[in-house]
Length: 173
Image (cartoon, rainbow, N blue to C red; front, side):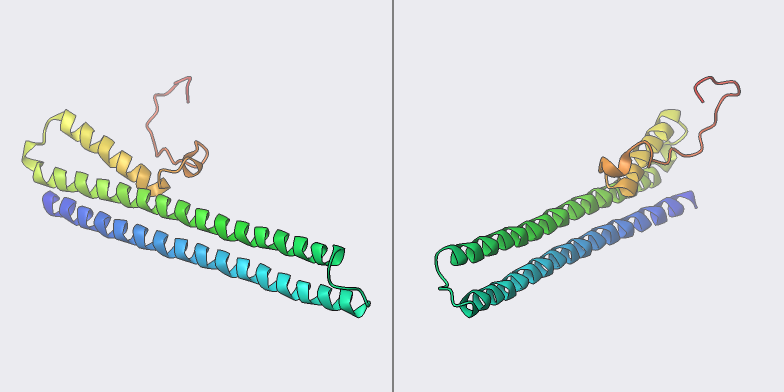
């Protein structure tokens, strides 16, 4: 019965690993697509502005060359740099999302491996060392599954240390 439960828990952890990876891939694709869309909007606005500026300069009877043309070209260059930065930032964030998803996937797979190991070695149990090792490995897998292993998501303020038993009168509590 305990072996079947451990095997079930391992299968659930494997499914959670797949879900974590798929969610991260989807979120990363969405992030990149949003960045490309925003960059495209900046470029479209820049072209509209360029057209309006060209018409204004020509409408004022000025030649569209020299200083007016340089000003329009400078603005277009700045707009293109802004669009490229938006697209690049979105791509970088997409990579970060994927990496965090892979870390979560690894954590769930580690949990599954510990559960399978415990199920296979159920007859060897009884030694406190094996029990303690399983608890440590499960904790490491749970940490990566919960936080993705990222420093931002694992600061002391955001970690849940669980319900530890404390000794009455302990000065460090």
